[in-house]
Image (cartoon, rainbow, N blue to C red; front, side, top):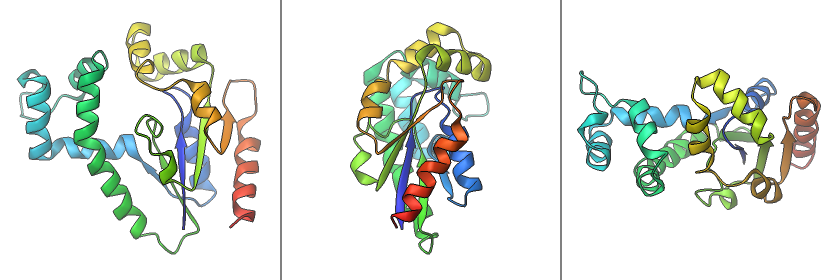
Length: 195
């Protein structure tokens, strides 16, 4: 089994690319989505409260993910500490997920922070989805209803798009003018023929 990392900055279109790979028969582990389930873990909840304070709690005792995001994306140290809490759990969960699919030729993970966590060498193939910064900002505004300031705070915690492109095996341009499906199919055929 070969592992593929689908990465790229916020608003680049990683999820769209991941959806197409799933249609092509390659299952995708959605790291951002899967990480949310760990916030209900009592041990994680206590660590997050210790990191940010009791203001992160909803009335029912659950963690408020919006408050967590608003705090950590303006403080790189706090973001690194939150990542240190969650990331080992996500990686372990991904390994277990892979172990249930060992008969497959390929599996993939969709994650924005492959390079930020120095994980690129852990995967057989790294694909970066690249988009111009202004295009990404507009996409996130429409999708998440965040202000430009909030989006820039989050983008500034991620490595530059150019760095990710330079250090990837494949790059998919998602700039609203280049057709994306032919790029994905080209990569799929290349990796399939090199099994």
